[in-house]
Amino acid sequence: VDRLAAKIKKICPPQPLNIMEVCGSHTQSFFRFGLDKILPSNLRLIAGPGCPVCVSSAGYIDAAVSLARKKDVMVLTFGDMLRIPGNKTSLEQERARSGNVRVVYSALESLEAARANPDKKVVFLAVGFETTAPTVALSILAAKKLGLENLSFLTALKLIPPAMEYLAADKQLKVHGFLCPGHVSAIIGTRPYEPIVRKRKITCCVAGFEPVDILEGIYMILRRIVSNDPAVDNQYSRVVKRPGNIEARNFMRRVFAVSKAEWRGLGVIPASGQKIRKEFARFDAEKVFSVSADARGVSPQQKKCRCGDVLKGLIEPPECPLFAAACSPQKPIGPCMVSSEGACNAYFKYRNVGTV
Ligand code: SF4
Image 1 (cartoon, protein in one colour):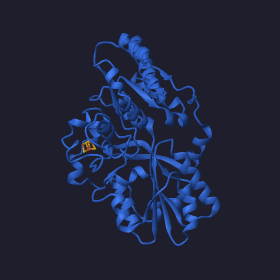
Image 2 (cartoon, protein in one colour):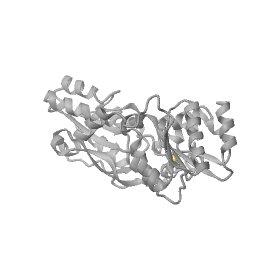
Image 3 (cartoon, protein in one colour):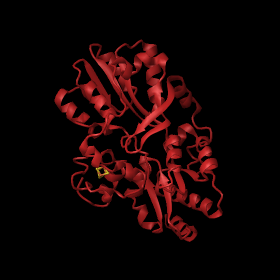
Image 4 (cartoon, helix red, strand yellow):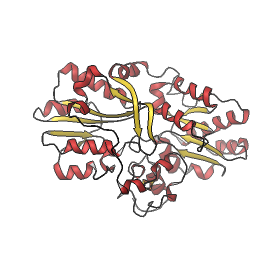
């Protein structure tokens, strides 16, 4: 770490530089290990929209809550989703009220839940990036094979490269380099970043999650900036290969079609989501229950949340007037405070702002 920090200091140009990571695990590692304290002061690592919980829209939570209120429905979710505020309530509050919400650790658990509860309509909340989507696709294929009639999936699956392209195009932001997510890249490989390099002339470097991985990734980006030679680099080559995981991507392609998606705080980004294909419509909870997981306006309290500006790196979490006052990990107002991978939560926890 010391050697890499010294190399970074030596090579870093004097002008302000923004490197954006697009991965919740990077955000957490960065704050947890205090890496910002050893980087040059003109070099900012921005925690971009890399936490799936943080970018789940309030409309999606509202739709999930409306399903959990139905007597014959059982909603299955990852634990992180429980505390995300919808416009009126959260799944955690709904769980206490109706008992219809259960926490699972994998999409595949939904198959067992559907088989064990034939009197219930089981709905899995399928949220995540390219890392999670293959397991959801596999679960849908398995549900079809098993002939499960009482299982469906409420999807809010998102694709990372279109969000990066959207942010790269934002002139207000000025991203000089992307530290690309290791987990997502294990699935998609490194090719999807090449158009960003070609079009935006911004280096994309895939990096692992240890402090040395992150620092080496930053060093590799700086080297490209200094030599004015943007490219796709792969610091995490022990895991990520250029073609990615072809089998996992084939599962996704069979089950999902690319669609627009709403990213909380950022808005609707074209071709950045995955919806269940028509041939699997009987497993699509939006169709089965005639609900929409799209945005339906934002409550006045949600309007005060500045997660969008945090995710874009326009402000630091403490610059939000609600930070550590009305909004804390115990009582989150915005999704960036909910998950341990959210920038506000990580800042609160590792900067000793309060007791978690
Ligand atoms: Fe949103 Fe809370 Fe972060 Fe403010 S501190 S941006 S309200 S999550």
